[in-house]
Length: 336
Ligand code: PEP
Ligand code: MN
Image (cartoon, protein in one colour):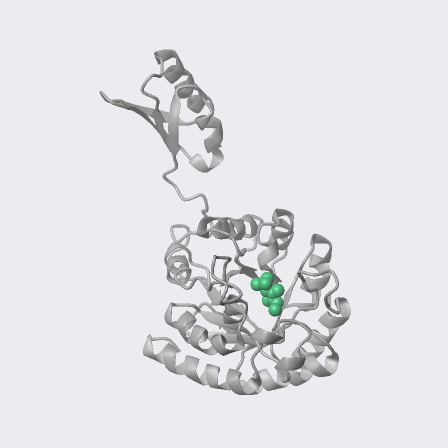
């Protein structure tokens, strides 16, 4: 951490800042220039509250030199994290597609779709049983009954299942059924939930908050990892911007940045990222080209009858074409 001292600071104030840091266990290196005085603190600055230092009399500004996240960083782990889910490798050379409806609607619906997405080449099944809806009057999901239906679809197809957990109280029950726990965009900064998920050993698909910065996103991953669960998959699902022609703005530039800064697998969600079914195919190819390890796509055998997110849901025919296209794109960039 670097502390820049105000030009008008008194010696007494500077000594106080130095003592404050030393008392917290930091070595202080002072550099007095003609214009500015700088204090360099040596020690783990993550344990220090930047704002506390900034509030000390005589301090102009404080700069961190370390990244605030540690476990999620490339410095902590050089090689890519690969998460194995019943033989499906997430984060390796091979890219993968997770597909399924926005919501589990009935046993027949989820089983039909599971069979269909499997035939198209999807490696995992998605489907929400606990749904975070913008309106309290909209369909809220089938709850545990939906989880049982997902488990049945897994049993019949062998596809691992990805499903959302909304609340700390439901972690145990969702973890009992799911292969991957999804944390939705609205819960990315629900720190209690992140901690609870961190205590399970279940792989987690962490969706980026729709107004989260890159650093906030990685700090949420850090919350889960700090509790001992290192099986975190990062998901870019679009952010809020001024633009209104798509539901969200799919921030594809974050994909190579995440791949550089972290060792965690990265997934792109072109469905929520655009909100438009006709944009899912081109954005799927763009996501893989940007370096994503996989895609999560909303697919329904009757998209127009989908109880949630109908306008961004594609049919199996389109999914099949996308998966074929993804294979070609992956091959072109040296992946499988
Ligand atoms: C979903 O995947 O169905 C979902 C609700 O996603 P998000 O949290 O990204 O909106
Ligand atoms: Mn959805």
